Length: 438
Image (cartoon, rainbow, N blue to C red; front, side, top):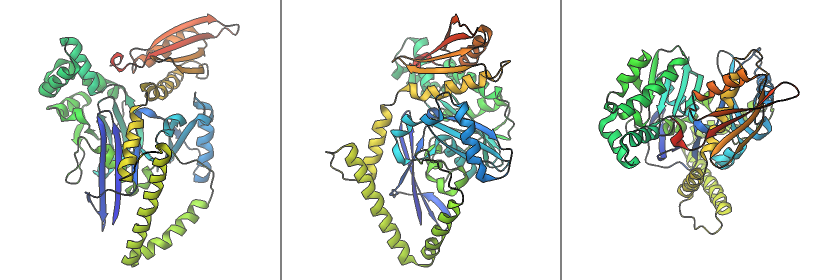
């Protein structure tokens, strides 16, 4: 029997799913695994899609590392990164700032994007785009032939609907949330926020057969029909085992079944090394005990008993280092509470910096000289993300500002004096207060 626990830290709380596999049959379990798999939120990392000019998989690591070394504004030395390779010969790289990853430590073994893709593939959708309508953002994942082909995040969600309703009616957020849940899409502000977000999805012009929707907002009556009418595609919900919500549990469930689709697995906490043929050696070493495990029920029981003890002791030691005076009663539960408390202390700036820098990179590709834009400093002054850079001309600066404002309407750009090199200094400010974004 295989038991795995997937955890998602969402804006509205923590979700945990325990999945049990016995004789290749998968179901929700009441038992907690000794090892919890934490999913890194999509707003805290960025993505790069790279074409591979060769089929030698041993060279892929070097290629991805080289591409990221000069394309990341914050530097690869400050990044934790991983990648997966598609059957069509493309590498999809996922990058997060090391400081963000540190708060989760070695328990990160997944990310929200791959978890959503895994949930959709489990549901039988191999050619689709998944839209997860959450409280603080909309996460989009394109899947082609059972593999990730597209990923992006829209900084708009249920919280923005609450704020829009509260502002129009001059009422509290609590009252606005009640109106949102009671009126649903009949409320003009609810409908507008979702429709505007779907327009951004439509602009991507992603060719797909189906739209798979999930998330809290998808519970609203008529939501499926609105998405169908806007995107002109068939819309469906996830198909999960009994006891798992197709609306709310997609990320946690996808994280829990990480072992089921190893080609969609990431591990941000692992230090990347050029290991050559070593993975085959480790696979061979792992295969022998697995054969013995299948043959002997007794060995299976002893093996899991030993693993539970190892993981429990390791988790207990980790908690003692973080909170020396804490009395440990349930190591797994205490660990999840510790990670959850750390997650609450993260700033919204961390969740946006990567997306902003990625947007600047996308905008620069549309300029006459795609290498003309340089970012030389990124800071956070407590209320604003501030990015300093250079460009060839003021029109180039305007194009960058207009591109960024599509996702961050609060973005403001100021140009500095012309340098001796005739390049333009610019300063990009984006408010970190969520009520400034739509």
